[in-house]
Image (cartoon, rainbow, N blue to C red):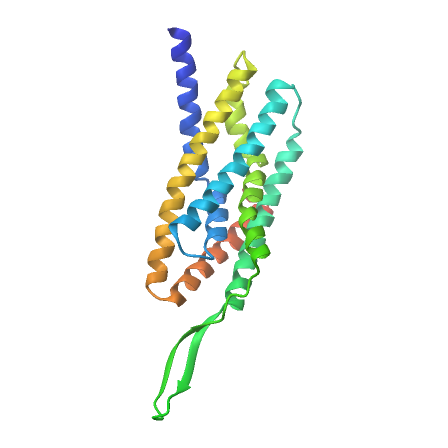
Length: 230
């Protein structure tokens, strides 16, 4: 009974830490920046799910190498991944600003036959190819993999399990940790999707304003990470 209670406590810790870890600032910033191109709960759910799958895959692979095969993961790898996260956040922000400019929404003036001139918001057509949209969706998975390698995720997940006697118990811990991350991201995806839908309902130009603010925040935060301030 004591042993089973001990295992249950460890798994509860893993799940709780996964819930908390999913809401790290760099995770939220990356997923929000990626999923803002199209308003919709399903769209946001998809990006959050793919990010969580990439994050979980990287974490399980690292855990397998460390706990089962006994490999040592150099600290320089985690440091490099942390710097790459900063670079990716900066590039994502710049990409979104470029996308906003290309799909820019502006006041369009025209005149009817009765000589009445009026203005309305006009948006350029989105001519993005199907292949480009496909690659854009998979970017969430790749960013999740990068986050899984970087800094706090391996440390947060592997530090407690390093004291466990069974590597398979450790693998179960990491798996439950990943489930916590996944569930937290699904909840966040729902909230994020509703935010984008609400913003879009206020006018097409409002979604680009929100995306511009998110992109600017991503660039600032990414630059902060690159500078070594964190």
